[in-house]
Image 1 (cartoon, one colour):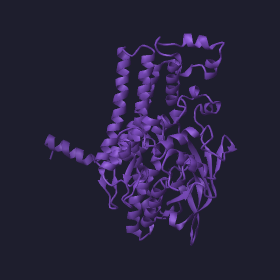
Image 2 (image 1 turned 45 degrees about the vertical axis):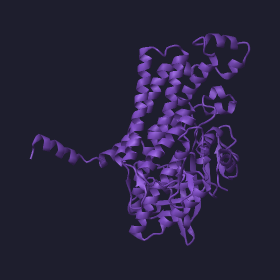
Image 3 (image 1 turned 180 degrees about the vertical axis):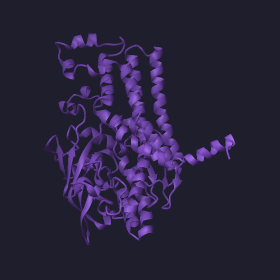
Image 4 (image 1 turned 60 degrees about the vertical axis):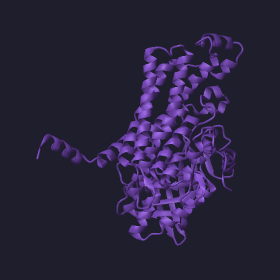
Length: 482
């Protein structure tokens, strides 16, 4: 059944029968588990039209495959305008949730594989592109969540996939049959894995001759036999088990990551989009990386909007909003946030059409965007903590505020401005804590650093993409050097 609203999405997760482990125990119902429900709520917002006037245009688009209205998260970009609207949608949802809404990796994987499968067919006579379009059309019709899985566990980082003592450190083919393939390995740091209906696997690096078994891409239902999920821990995550909205900081929304293990999983041929074409594997990695580095110019900016608002509130609640140094810090936070947004829009606006007909971003500018994202949120966070003060990590618990013996003292001594309720001040402190050192920091800070590749990956890409010879010729011409 097609998913059309947030409640329908949540109900669809309840129908999945998967092997999931949370804090060492099996979890049969992820959507209603208190550790996981906030992350499911964040994904559910992608099914919610919401109140923003621009939301319908950003969330929905016409499919180039069927002409039907579909979620933009399942769309193949058909123009520069599509690329820009993607970034605007991501900023909007970041502003709604204050966290990661987890559908971007699948969307970026779709758009990378769309062009690569086309080019692979042209080079090798393979049937991947039509297979992929058939799969995508089904995803669009059902409006399901597909998790993009690229990052392998990698083992010894100094060794190639085929040189690992344990070959399972990279997802690889262990058997080929007339009906399909069998794969083994694991994907790490999988954002939104427990909130997804399908898993779209891609190679984690450019493979070489002799590494054909590792040059594999496929899609598989999340509840397929042989797949195991292990939830990753986040700072202060067990606060969600205490039933205290105040102590959580962001009680409605969150994110999650998991280790996804493939133990001899069978993949039918119609779900295989690459199998052994080593010369095409690097294209998937590079194009996915560019799309996902573009994404961070939207989603992290939206979360930054919320953190800037929280810092401004903290200043006002404490009566320091007119201090010049506070105004300067808020201005600097805005400057850094909008700079990231500018990069996301710039790489989108300079996108171009591929041989397959879809549109890709400017890769150089996408890498510039992401390299800024590895820095600026950390400075925005530092400034927010500076404005808020030490109370973000010394605030008493909700149980203390509920205790009639000490609550009057807390109301008295933790008050800021007299016209602001003490608990309002405490709520904004807890929210800043969540985004800067708590659960929310995993999605805002650690993702900013390592999601879509760590800073060195962007530096390598930038050094490869920039045309230094052209710049030298400009200097020589103006300097009249022959």
